[in-house]
Image (tube, rainbow, N blue to C red; front, side, top):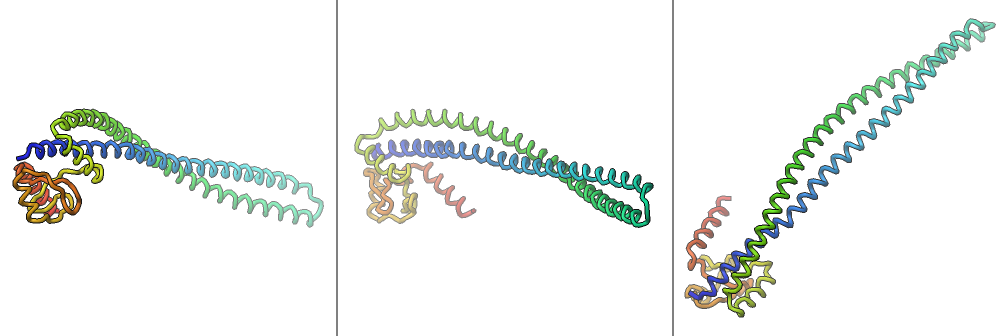
Length: 253
C-alpha cells in the first residue's frame, strides 16, 4: 500500500482531533456567557421585585401617615362638639366626623391589603433570593469546571499541533498541498474512508473503477461528488470496526 495513504490518514486523524478541540474551545466562552446572562437575568428580576416592594412600603407609610392625620382630625372634631352653639353646627360637625371616620376605615382596610401584599412579596423575594443563591453557586461550580476543561483543552491542542507538525513531515509535498487545498474547502475533513463502496463524507456511491483503484491502495483519488480524497477503509481493520459501530448506533437511534 502507498505509504502516503497511511501518512495522510494519520494527518487527518490529528486534524480531526484539532477540530474537535477547537470547536469545544469556541463553545466554552459561549457557555460562560450564557451562565452570566442567566445570573444577570435573575438578578434583574430580583431587583425589580425589590423596587416594587420598596414602592409598596413607601405607599403604606404614606397611607399610615394620612390615617394618623384622619384619626387626629376626628379627635379634634370630637373636642369641638362641646363648643357648638346650635343643632345646625352639631349636625355639620357630626357629619364631618362621620365622613372622616369612613375615610379612615377605608384607608385602614387598604393598609391591611397593602400589608398582606407586602408580606406576600417579601416571601416571594426570599424564595427568589434562595433560588438565586443556588443558581449562583451552581454557576460558579460550572464555571470552575469549564475553565479547568478550557485549560486542559488548550494544553491538548498545543500537543496535537506539535504532533501534526511532525506528521506533515511524513507526507510528500504534492500530497500535502493537495490535502491542504481540499481541507480548506471542506471545513477540515479532506481524507475520508470508502466503506461498502460509499464515500463516508457525502455518502454517495463511487464508481466501480474508482473502487477497484482504491482497493489496490496505490493511488489517492478524489470523490467525484464532494471532492475529498479517498482511501479504502478495509486497508485499516480498526477503521472498518469503527464504521460498523457507527452504523449500528445510527440504526439503534
